[in-house]
Image 1 (cartoon, rainbow, N blue to C red):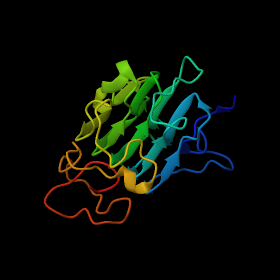
Image 2 (tube, rainbow, N blue to C red):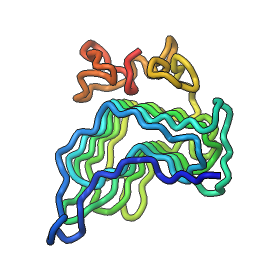
Image 3 (spheres, helix red, strand yellow):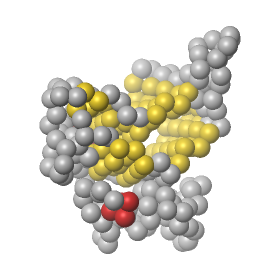
Length: 223
């Protein structure tokens, strides 16, 4: 058995006090149009990324967290495991303020465990805006409605969220489930994602197709 750790990227400050060599500061970035796989091993943690720095935009990304070879539930061997699209945590000396998470898509077939789309940590973290995201995790049970989770001093005042998946057990009608190829991630006819987004500064989708029009859709790829 091979244990696979967190597959997510980490973007944040290079140190705690801002002094000395290598204490670089990250801010004002855009993370977009990435396709991340969760591998097929035995993960304890599945995430797209951790963002611990100010003024970051995370948009049009896909997290393919299919485990095993079929869409059936995947129990794994670890009693404690977590799936989350991204972590947003506090940082010093620049507090993590102004993180925008728009039009991303996630699928995972892990069985139970804790499963959020965004986890926000730290009392100084603020102004996290979460909109137009799809998360389909059909086997997670109790955590299905926990789209955003706050801990370690963070409160609900740290974020705003709208036009996202309401319950992660609800099928968004991807073109194919589990989505395997890029084309599979398109919401098909009848999907709750179609015309259900809100206006955000994401002018194109993962495939560079224009989002301009009367209504906005949820997810990384347009129907």
